[in-house]
Image (tube, rainbow, N blue to C red; front, side, top):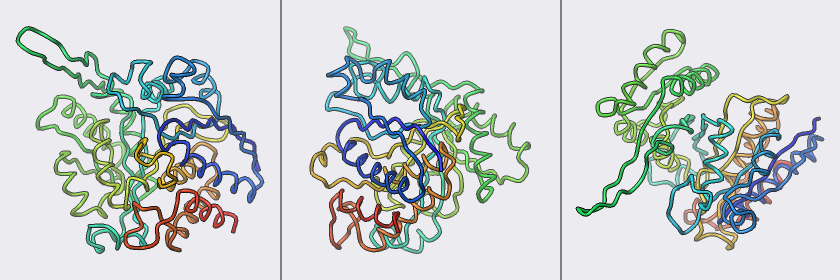
Length: 363
């Protein structure tokens, strides 16, 4: 039994709805195993801009920094702008990632057998799919400067800057190597070294580090070839490590192996440790999904699975994390599914799916 501090940031769109179901699952864990989760809610995104003047306030960042972990929903709005602008909802998430040095975004991709028949991918291709994609999260195009549209008499032009340091690449690759050591000992590094200088540096670092991990089988592959291989031979992957934008795109593709964007959780981790484990921010990968907001139709399972990752990595509660993941699988197998994964079967609401998972956790 233990006492743990969690900052909860529901955010925008479907964020509050899916977070509510993840909190219900955590309360079930609390009741079954005798833990005390001190969960403190704070503002991020559009409501934070309206009430506090920025996508996230200094006070909220401080509260996050002092916690054991952050459970996050989604941020975003209709407007398009720079994510480092405090008046953009995305500013809050980008600031947390950068200031808390959450450089490794861990995205597990695993097929639940009961969902395999509902995808457009052949069932035999999905057999045994169990991978983790590690996306570098604080460098690359999303943070490079300058990033702007330039106006001139001859017309507008745009510039984005892709930059990585050797140290940034090394720390995320070492994270991936260590992760592979605890799994099936295979690491795939994804780059575009035939075109990009940043990728050539990435490949150079892989070549330097690989001899330090002689027990790990290393594959290096271009991002376009990887996109094809994820559909052709997904069960051959164990741990994939790649840069920021490539990881963003490839994991959206990989979500189809699990059945839906609504099935993929994530953990954003760095070097900071608490007395319980590794500090991190946990979120579904699906974003705000505003067309589902307020309708009780969004899939809460990615958020509940993100809470399981929170239990495992930040709180050191592996048994409890396994219990949540088993409950999700049992709920899906029992037929509890939102529209995105229901196929031709019965469609359940967000809260119905969340309640089913909670009941399975409680036993």
